Length: 251
Ligand SMILES: [Zn+2]
Image (tube, rainbow, N blue to C red; front, side, top):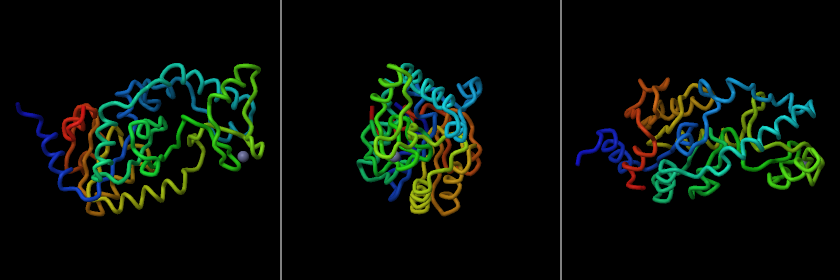
């Protein structure tokens, strides 16, 4: 049985790679049933995101942010890693991929078995919360229980600072350490694989360009065309799970 040429070519590129880096966007997680908030028709085109400054300044904005977060939990909190995530985790385990840079906040790479220290989250993580002052991690379950009991908004258990999901909100600075790590990995890559990102949101979209101009092979797997297709060595406009699963040999 013959397979699509993209899969064969991708497998050969993976076999030749010494330092692979994977870059993921919403498209890999939509295959787990998590909606793409930024897409046309996505939640953020119907309901404006809460700006970071508003979250800081307004108790009402914080209340709305938490209300939305817990509503989201009920809709797709049970989402699990899919074949694409499993293929990526397998490449990390085999040592072919050294880091996964992600625009996603769903924690599904970690859930699929990629060690924490090999996931670089450019937009943070929504599966837990953190103090905006001291960074102390807070779990969501007790925050939700208090919120639903009497509307209590969370304060840091250590310093009384404001607690927010550990995501990077609109209007919030990009995380410096994550950006530095992503750049270091990008410059070390000889193979850079983009999965499910339309590559329109900068600065994130700058990483594939940086990899390519630094001499890496660039692969893009995305349902739709991206802004960098013309630059890529291989472009596959197919399902990420099927393409990666077939190329890596993972179900
Ligand atoms: Zn604190």
